[in-house]
Length: 159
Image (cartoon, rainbow, N blue to C red):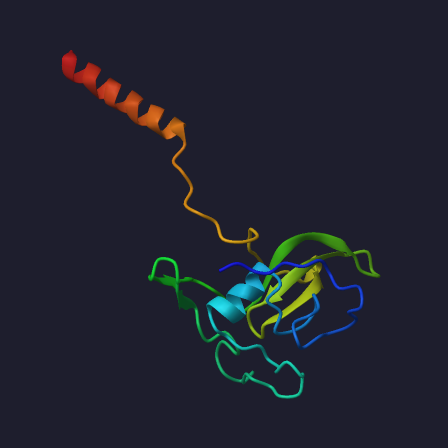
């Protein structure tokens, strides 16, 4: 499954709860949000109206309860090992805050919030790609490498 990526909504200000804006909860517009909410089936800290907390901040993992899902294409269970309930940077530079610090788009696996975040606070980085990625073909160079190894083994046996 792939995320439905849309351009930023210029009418959005502050934190949004219904997933229609870049900053807020229940947002499946980005790859990490789509994975958190759709693939893994987790819930964000707030309902779409922003009134009801869905997760217990005193519990381990907070809102990150599921770290595996069933891939509908292959029928296999996909486990995301070492998924830490913390902030993940995943965008290019968005701009600078009022203090001159670089701001990037982040997704917080602790509570399901997506927001612009200054890099000075730290976090993890996650390289993402829009949409599903199909199997990567083995490059021809790998075939040449295998042939060269076999050739060297053949020469060694010949001598």
